[in-house]
Image 1: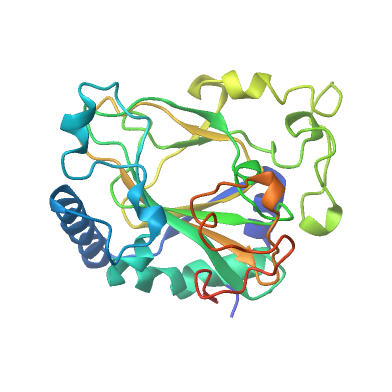
Image 2: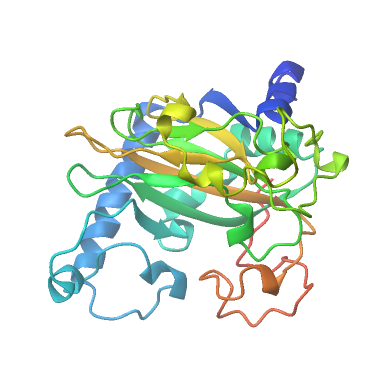
Length: 288
């Protein structure tokens, strides 16, 4: 049974993002919040990395880390990479049928694998603006076919740093590097949205602030989807409230490793993958 309507699919292909709606109830959201609190507490007391995936060491404070490094500027985000490997509560969400059903529809009903997940938070008083960017060229993957599910664990608003997107930037050659694969079979229907040559806005867009983007406000338990070439940003959390999100990045089964694009990615640099190898290892589980 289809999760998305044809109008929702067309909107995603046109805009590069889709505000979907509620996928978790209040009790499920609270379970994830409590699991995150537990993991944070464990990390602040952890003596070594035994039993943890290597990528989990990055992006957040661990025991003695903040004190040892001295005063620091506020982070743009706090990040916990591959929560599914350390918290069963998060692993269970990866195969949520509303999420994976929608992703499969947007990927021509291909089986989907997890590329990786992350919990991203902007705690009050320790966060900053996360600049405008898109994701694909940070990843060692062969084609821009990835779709991200951004699931709010708190109500997300412009004031506390909700996602802001640049509609249509995923299919507009002006926003992509010259030579980017904008093949029609990726459902991008490439079309310039204004005057300019391919790549002409590639540098400029990275300086854009939230005033040039569309905010995507979500209630806790709601999610949005965005394409890996869609430009997005999150402003600073200026409130006294948390802004936490669980981010799941899916790829179609058969996606291949492309080392040259991101040779030192934290999720692959310890796996010794061969260039061109299909990403079908247990570290990238089938989810739907």
